[in-house]
Image (cartoon, rainbow, N blue to C red):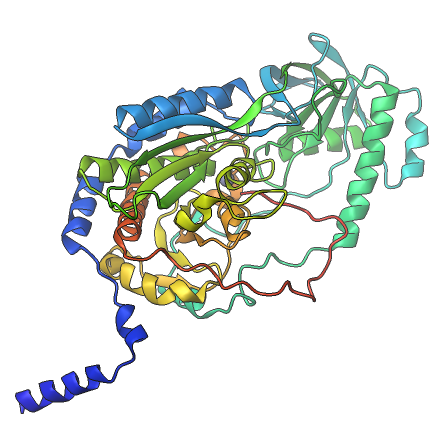
Length: 525
Ligand SMILES: [Zn+2]
């Protein structure tokens, strides 16, 4: 009976088409065991986290802090024994560099209270400590601006609030439930991963009015502009649209919604509000955007020049220390390579880590890398390294643990990842979702037809924390980051040992029915 069954199976195998058999992935389970042990027992995640957050500090693109972060990463990569370590120029940065040297803001009447606040990047300084009455710009339409003519020169100006505080009934951090993971796995890319529809017309009208107000305030010569930043209880960092060499814009400050709201309500009750504010910023001439790169070179005679690329962006906003966004991604990628290095692996392909600069201002570092090595930006012709590009893995969704992987609509890798992910089912990593993820550096590779992916992550205080003064070391869940480094190291190793590179999406004719936005609203993670 047993023999007959075996015979039937063997006969069946003989008639299986060749392509089905060739898809069997070879997973070196003894190496996966070693990676898990090294990653969980000897992790460097805490030390790496300290270095890139507390020690290096905020890493705004073009700032002194971004240089400090790059230098720290390079030195650390060298210490860890990575090879070909370098800080590499990626692109020019038209905004120029900017450092905040001092920020202080307090309400002094009707009573004293100081405020946590954050200057808007690429805006100017106050003339020392300025004191005086706060003028609320109360306008619903451009014509309302007339009443402020000649009245705000040298004044502290409070912009009208554009949002209301949103009470949260959701937990700050949550694990994806089995049910949610099942929904992710079954959803088509059209069903999920799209941002909720925005009222674009209203958004544009609001933006236009704001531009008119800013223009007016600038012409009238206000001393400082105060904004309410975001809908949550900490100021979100952002930057002005400055081009290097232009005159310095008026000093501008983001206040927490509570501070802004309190002063606005007091003024609307006809009680005068006074403040003192001092902001000192420094503009730095024409800096570049840099990537920090290190690798374990490949060893196979034929495959060693092919590259498995791991990446995350090293730049941050200037309010916090960019811990979740995106020191977390950088240290996971560095730790993944450290694990492999410590295990003395001899990968067939080169495994490279790239920490991208200037992501927050438009994926500059990864775009610069693509331009330099992969696709000529002018002719769109592929460079020699294009055909040596095996796969790219990116992390940029905070500290949450990996629960699976997004296919970025690339159906061709599904059977491959289904095999790769199996040894991690007991760690809660088993979901494969077809959908796209957006807003960060894997898009630079996806856009030129190369396979680039992000993992599915739990939501750990990310939505409320990223880009804020609260995005610091405390936001990091070390156990989750160790877990992520183990998965990343395993995927990188399997990719580096596989016979073939990973398939990109087949080329298609451009879509003809893409809805056109007048002004796209880019949102960078
Ligand atoms: Zn980010």
